[in-house]
Length: 278
Image (cartoon, rainbow, N blue to C red; front, side, top):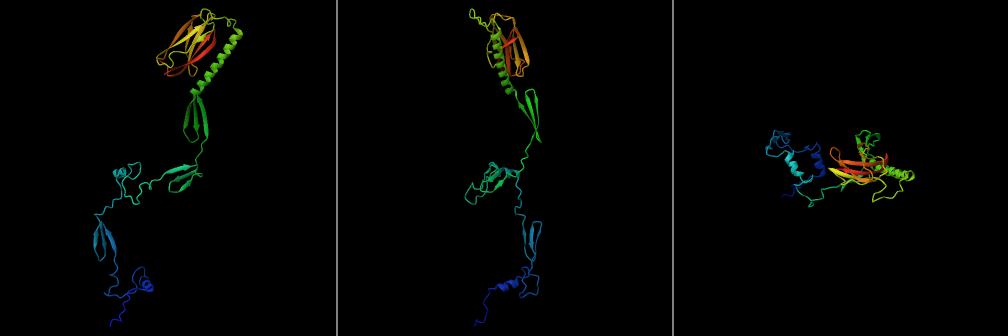
């Protein structure tokens, strides 16, 4: 008759608490071999040998513990513009690990992630500390920064052209008001006014020809060639009057850029034209 035998092997919560009350060690049990410590084991590692006291030893030398990638391995992983090219895809999507970063106003956002407000970041605004004009170059110095050079030659050239046009108009007005010969009609196809033609070819890198006409009433005539800064590089005296003539400009020795040539008759400026050396 086995009815008197307790077959209930399920411990109650109270019994479990009593058994493991001392930091996980059994505090109430029947000691069967007379030793109260031989059930407790220590684990230790010596070199690559992992050992449990009163037990076995495992050699860990065959386990690859090298978690440091070589340069070749890193290059292979980031060869595709920084995206991993060799990995195990765990969720079936090959794009959901890729994120975009964007800036809207002062908000820096990463897709599928958070947003950072940059409005409180010190952007270190800088003040202009100095501005110096050397020739046609404007040097600008910025606080706690490097200097910046701005070439004003194109702007000054446009201004010079406008000035030249105004001077031509003034000369023409003065000529009409003061020159008694201005009303004389052309004779035999020749004009009674000085004429300066555009140089041909233009632009040029070798030699260019400048055609002009000096009327018979002229006592003196000069063709003055200057650079973009207004410095005279050639002053050609013209002795022929009442006829057409040509002056020639050689680009040898001249720096490529914009030049101007002006016709003077009787020390008065007639007109100015622009030529370009390549």
